[in-house]
Amino acid sequence: MANGICDTGAPVTEHGVAELTRSEIVQWRNAVFLIFALSGIGLASWIARTPAIRDSLGASTFEMGLIVFVVAAGAIVGLTLSSHIIAKIGSKATIAGSVTGAGVGIVIVGVGATMTVTQLVVVGLALFGLGNGMCDVAMNVEGAANERALGRTVMPLFHASFSLGTIVGAGIGAAAEQFGVPIVVHLAVVGAVIVGAVLVSVRFLRPDPFATSGESGTESDGAAEGSKGWKSRLAIWKDRRTLLIGVIVLGMAFAEGSANDWLALAMVDGHGVDNATGAMVFGIFVTAMTAGRVGGVFLLDKFGRVPVLRVSAMLAGLGLLVVIFAPATWLAGIGVVLWGLGSALGFPVGMSAAADDPRNAAARVSAVATIGYLAFLVGPPLIGFIGEHVGLLNALLLVLTLVAVAGIVSPAARKPRELDGVGSEPQPARA
Image (tube, rainbow, N blue to C red; front, side):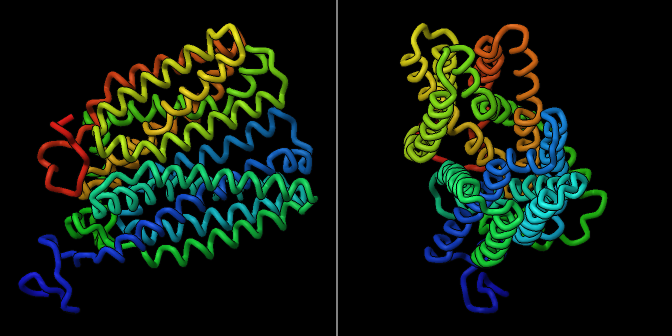
């Protein structure tokens, strides 16, 4: 390469990365959409067969709690290691390897459940969680890089694709349960499809045109960084902005995760609805959250991150207040819609903000995602413990508090001025 022209004759950026055509950027975007959806399908497939796996193993509720914890623990390990792996081999190879590992893991779970070998199920879930955690960071790094290349907000749509994937996975799992498809057959097919699809889709991922070669997590160079590289990535945890973005993601992830784990039961115990209605109310929440992510891209492009995050926190907080204190079920239902809409954008916007600087995007996304995932790891038992003493509805006041804190620190998501020329983050009048 010389004088701004690579060996193939294509123009390059000032950082030595070939400029991408519009078609390449769109193919890249579509590949990221698919990767997010595959992640959702895999997660929902395991969740959908959890009752059948419990019955097959003959596990108690407590034992299943320990087994499920293995997935979360594996994910935390994957999140923690992800930035170092990405720096070494690049996000493209990390996605291919981690999803393949997760696919193999879910197959092992199916085999273990069929053979009634609990230890095998635990090994499979550990591998599944590890792969999912590592992929989560890598696909968000890719999504943020593609967002910069597109020059418009798209991250919430990637997360909406994940939500749609969970719906598809749950539907397939329900159908497999209904028609008596053996666990091992169901999970083996899902695992094979996920691995095959991701190995095809990663071919369309591209280097970040805004990244400095060898410094960004989206680059595959990553050669011989050694202890200095590890120390620089660990130093991210001392960065004030990164930690504040983590607080935003933590609060909004708590709002999302608490609904996933407790909303249906809170409606049954707190508002006296039957189990079917409780499940339907949770479906309303998921639908509202998915709609919020789809529609949120237009609001983010028009108003910028900070105003949208503030309004999101207000909506989620108002929705929680209505659900907790509503005297009528129909009014609580309105609160659920507000709660879902308000919870939609915090996590994806936090990922975009963490990846503003492509040179250390992987390390920052890893740190922010790890903080956010604490909500999914610690949240369910904490709310359950509090709910045991004061009731589930009143326990949700903790979620309300964290959402309020997320709204207060939302200015941390604003793109730093020194990065204004890198990619794009809509900023009307520096909102």
